[in-house]
Length: 433
Image 1 (cartoon, rainbow, N blue to C red):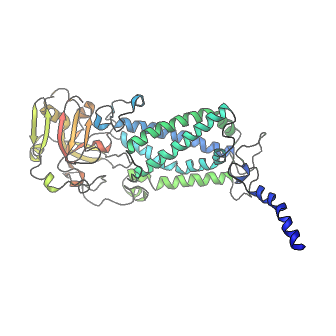
Image 2 (spheres, one colour):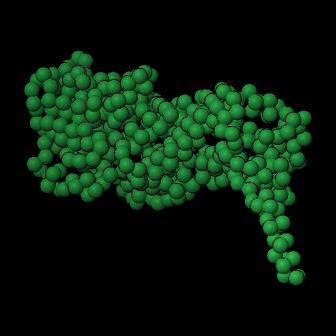
Image 3 (tube, one colour):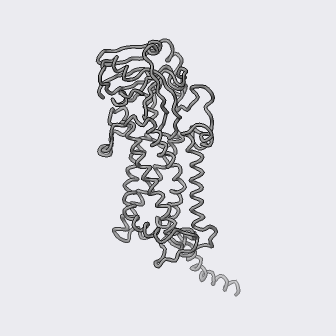
């Protein structure tokens, strides 16, 4: 009889155990005492400023490639109206691209902890049911889908590009470009819907670790929170410390000396390049693109084309021409850059004059000895050719170019992305592109 009573009482206890099982759609599933609208609003304000800066500098980076100049520069030929803002990229100040792209990559890295914390703070809302309670709520959920999906995709592809890991099929330029516009659509919609609420919340005070006591219930606060082990101020401090650590271990890839040695999280940081005039960063080595001494030896000739016909020059003949110097950095899309290096060689405008354009140098189409890979061919605008600092460089820092830096000759143009500073130049074709 006792055993029967025990078995009979088991079904009576099952409903209690079933009710204890909660799903992510149940507000009681989320029990962190840190979540709250003010905590989320602070993170949202940081992201509002940071993501806006990311988008603007990203657009500037795209414009710097001069994608409307020639198809070879355009990695997104189907962009249509999305290229409405493109303009002729300037050559001054000479550190312009180093600044804008350095900001783009550094801010993106630093924002990773903030983005993850923000997603964590609102994750209960992503599982809330029903999916849409009103038209406004439906628009908010759609904007969240675009915002969260676009942000994660942009950060993932950007971080992989910084590390030179192209794991996602397709062109990084195309994927990152269109992903940015999808993200922007969600970002603008979400800001329009949520900014007034965020401002009201922030005006009520910054979280100090005490429980929220607003007149209305906090929609992000856990209804059944666990005991607090960390205040909201402490949580914000942890996010800030994570961002600061990423700043210290990545930003130095654009600086020489101790800061570069601290940049352990990027391919162009953490180590010195060694002594000598050619001891500064490169992206592609000669060996990596299969440039051999036979390609760059005595038989090498530079071909220059224009109205004057086709001209060919040996390296010795180029060195015999009037030489000019320019102190310019190399800055790449991955966010790394060098300090100013002293380049010496023949002005592109002088070569344009030899090609048949003595008064007004036009655009130039540059071809490299490199036979495969992106940007082995590139186009430069007429304003870049006219600038007296734009050189077909033969030397750097008082010594001949090394093979990895483009021997026997390379392009160097102020404020241009590194990939447009073509190495191992074989042909220059001057004319309208």
